[in-house]
Length: 140
Image 1 (tube, rainbow, N blue to C red):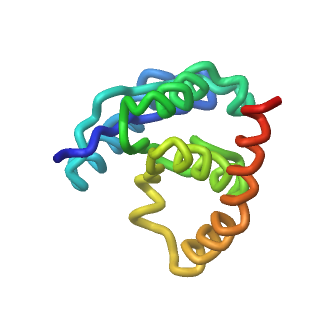
Image 2: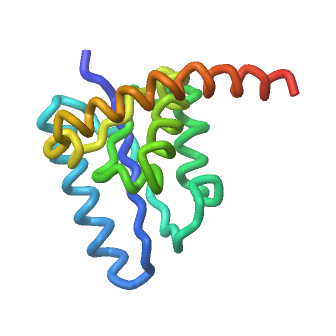
């Protein structure tokens, strides 16, 4: 069975928005095709350097991930999800808790062994903490 994928696109600046959206969309669609995923939804935000909690389509993506509308989220670069490895690890864990895998197209192609090890260590440290915080929020 083919996994369903969503694409998340985030553009920093209003200028050249259409070109930048198309570039990210094509890169993510090509990556989805290369790993045999079916793209079912595309989310996009113009961030203006806002946090992820202030990006309406990213919040919708998180909400839809809880509903099981897709199995995988593809972003072109890690910067679309967070400002640093910690942010990325936190959101990756939140998505994993919803049963959704995060795929970073450019990272998949370019990450060094050292970067993958650092990411894995962060995920091991962050995972239980995020899970516990989300459990506490359910009862708050």
